[in-house]
Structure formats: C-alpha cells, structure tokens
Length: 628
Image 1: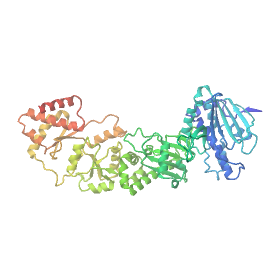
Image 2: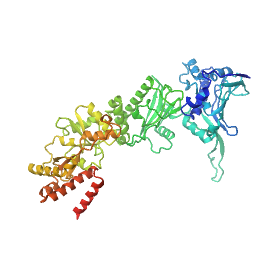
Image 3: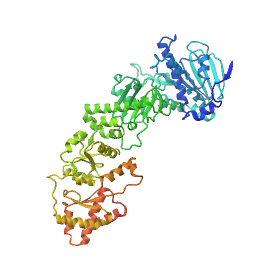
C-alpha cells in the first residue's frame, strides 16, 4: 500500500471546499455525474477514432443508495483511471483531466460533448461526505486501484480487485447531510441537473407491464418485467436538427420541460449554430400576461446537456428572459460552481445572435400568416415592446412586424398607421397625433367622442407602452402620442365636419364663467368643446406629459424626475352640445345651477375613477335627492 499527501497549495482546502468553493451544496451530484459522463464520452471518442480496442457497448451511469452503510455510489462504465492517472488527476487539486484530454485530441474531440475544464468538480463530494472512495479500472486493462480520503489532505492508494472498466465513487455521507441518502432527494437532484445528460442514468429498477398478446382474454393476468429505471432523456429535442423534428415533437418537449404548464406555447424558435460559437436550443413564446414580475427565470441554461442555471441574464437579452425553453452552449464561460455567468465577447455574440433569430422568426411569422400573427399579438406584445425599447437592433427589425391595435380590433403596422391618420390627426404644429386608450371600459366615453369625430383610437394597454411611446416620439420627429382623455386631444385641427356648438359665444362664456366659479377650489382649468349630445356633459382630461410620467413611474421609468409622486392635474371640458349645458344656463337660481354643475363634475370624476371616499358618498346622496 502506498500512502502520501495530496498536493494542494493550502492545508485546509477541504473546509474551504465545504463552505465557500460552491455556492450551492446540492450541486455535488451534478459534478460527479458530469465526471462520469465525461469518462464515458471520452471512451466513446477513443473507440470512434480507433485508439481504444474495447467494445463501447451501451454504457450507463448508475446511482445507488446504501442506507445501511450511509453511502451513495456513482458508477460509470467509462474510460477509468490507472494508478498514475489517479495520482495525476485526483491528488493534484484543480488539475482537469478533461481539459488535458481535449487539448490532446483538440482536432478530433471538439464535438465529443466532453464538459471539461472544471477541475475541482470531484472535490465537491466533500461538501456532503466525510470520506470518499474511488474504485477504478482503466480501459487499457492496467490494474485497478482503490483511492480513499477522509476529508483531510491525507489519502491512501492501493490495488483493487475491480474486474470491469470504469469508476465507482463512494460517498460516506456526513451526519449533517443524511438527506442525500433519501431516494426522493437524489431523484429530484438528478431530474433538476441531469435530466438531459447524454448518457443514460439508472437509479434502480421498475416493473413494466407488457401488452397482452393477441387472443388473450380480458381476465388473463398481465405479464410484467423488471426494467432499468432510466430517469433522463439522453437525446432531447434541442440536440437534433430542426429537419428531424415535427411540430408535435416541439410540443412534447415543451411538456417535458414544464410538466405543470398546461397551456401550449404559441410558437418556438430553434437555435442551431456552430460558428463563430457553438449554440443550440429551443425557445418558446408562451402566452404572457401584463405582469412583468412573474415571467422571468423560465429559460434553462445547459452546458453539454448539463443544467447550469435558470437565470440567463447576460446571455439572453433581458427582454427575452420572459420566454421559456433551453439554451445549450459549451462556449459560455462559467465560474467553478457553474452558477454565475461571466460576460465576455463570446457571450455578447451569443446574445446578439439570439436577438437576431427571434426577430427573424417574428418577421417570417408576420409575412407568412399575418392573420395568425395578429391573433397572437396580445399574448406576445409585452416581449416585443420590451425588446423595441431595450435593444436598438431589435427595434429596427421590429418596425416591420410590430402592430398597433385599435379599439375596434384592427391591427396596423406603423407605416399603415401613418398613412391612415395623416389626413385627420394633425395638431396646430403639423405633427401627427396618435390617439390611444389604455382601457376600453374606463375610457369608453372619451373613445366614443373621438370616434364620432372620425379619429382612429389605438389600444395600447401594456405596461411597456408609455416607455415605448416616449422612444417612438424621440426617434420619429413628426409624431406625438396623446391618450384619448388627455388635453392634447383638443389641439387637433377641427375639420369641416366637426360639430358646431348649439350655444352662442355669449352663452359659452357665461357657462364657462359659472362652472369656473363653482369648481375653483378643485383647481380645474375649465374649457369648452362641441361634442355629441350623447357624450357626457362634462369630462376630465389630463395633461399627456404628467399622466405618462406617472404611468412610466409605475414600471420603473421617469426616475429622472425624482422619486416623489407626480401630482394629479386635470382640465374640465364642458360639452356645449349636451342638454345639461342649456339647462344650467336656463336655471333660474344660482343654487340650482351650482347643484347641477356639482353633479355634472362629479359624474366626470366618477367616469375618470377619481371620485372616492366622502366625496363619493356626497355624490350618491345628492343623486338620491335629485331622483326624489
């Protein structure tokens, strides 16, 4: 028996590993299974190039739990190690055998799927074990060896009677980590980190019921057999060429990724590039709500089919983190725990590629089936609007397919919108004014008043819309957005078919003066306009700028204006064509005039959603009195 000391740069490496080296204790299993996968893929590669004169067969990785002895076993049928290799790869902490293998066979092994360059992966075992053993036999048929270490820098190395090639790692689980002796815990970790590893992972056996043979009677007992319980899918959809997959395959894979998600995705984007970086994956557009806070962390990042993280910020542009699916790339640099991404040139290229692929997919969907694209717009608009706001190159491409729905359920591109409104929506400065609503129900009376004049009203109800409007106004010199209940609506040039007021100029002045007198404590700026007699007698409008700043503040924008709340500012617009305007003028007493004005103002405030509390109670009481 040989005894020696592991060659490390500090004596207390194991406490450091246990406490600080890895950010999450449970990844020890991922690291060890990844090592076993590497060992198997190395053997496959050597067999393929004729450097290993052994039968590759159908190797598996087996996970065993021995509760009686408090041990967890990870067994592979891979390349194995000789005594010299154990000394080199195990006793020299942070020397990566995979890295050396890839360097030696760099021309032929680049597509072998070997994970490599993590070095310290094996030592993650000491996060949960107070003793670790390695029993291994090389494919070269050199004598098998048995390595053992009790969590100190001391190790032992002796011959083993292991007859078959491969490696068995035995973890003697520490008292504070006994949960890792539970089958449910190990299965959960394997399904989380190793669900799509390229080598089958066996965890025990299960009983499978065989189909009854032809002619069998219903009462005949079923035939069963015991089969290996393989818990992973070694050939997930993203590892295949798009030409190999049908729409059904993409839908099935989505259900495999998200078994608790019952809604099917709207469409998918298959990523497959090998130059200037290697990247595969499938992204899905799910139906999205307007809540931006609950959508993220649904894309899973893999490296050679090993799960890394579901926080892909920095790799996937932020606006696409609301999508779902898988990205797999060996070119994404990771730290030793594989938990945090390091931004570099390759990652930036990957991010740009993903952005371009998504934009190209959306463009093709729009061109090939516009009607179908329009039907999906409300479910994907948050992602597209967010992308237009945050990614300049995406914004340029999105101008071809981004839609602007109207309150009448038609969908227009920006170019179509400009053509349609050019003749009517012009303000005093010659700018095109795009009228929009954010809520068809709450702004119904304002929408109807605008439509009656012939105006097109857009429905922009996503939380991103205020920010996007600000950007569009900055990039297009000749347009401005105005909400249908904003004061800017009054600045639109009136056409010859505009309504003529039923009141004379003298009557309008008298009415305006009286309303101003009654409402002066509220601070409203009183204005008049000839609207339909069916419109409300009084309406509140709000300065577009202040209202939009408040909307932007809700989603984190407008911060440059300070952290305080923006004040409410309203204009009170009198409809001079409404019968109530005439009735107010003809009322014989100031008391009745004041009562009617207050009632009309409160109706306007009620329709705007700003009549609350004691004032709402007073309005209800006054309404009851009027009914009496």
